[in-house]
Image (cartoon, rainbow, N blue to C red; front, side, top):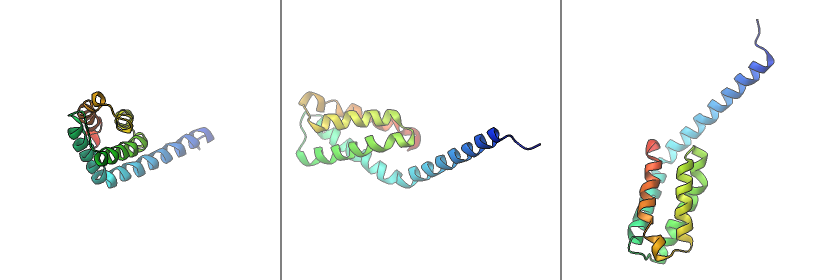
Length: 118
């Protein structure tokens, strides 16, 4: 007995989803060194910002990294990481001393949200 058209379409869809998952997993592994560097940079900027101030150069660099993470983490299934990176990006866009002091905790939360993939 041949499978019905509906079950064949479902099977094809599952195969395509598996292929997409495999490509994403491969991309994640390939980009892990870059991701780790970006997290380290966010950590350094957060450490500087803990005092309530941050020089322009590290702020802009961390802002750009947070923006990239906001745009990419969700694609890999890290929705919580996306939200945390978005918060970091928002703070670094126009920081206030009080907001800057929250960056070390956010950086720690970001790394924790990605721990299963690091």
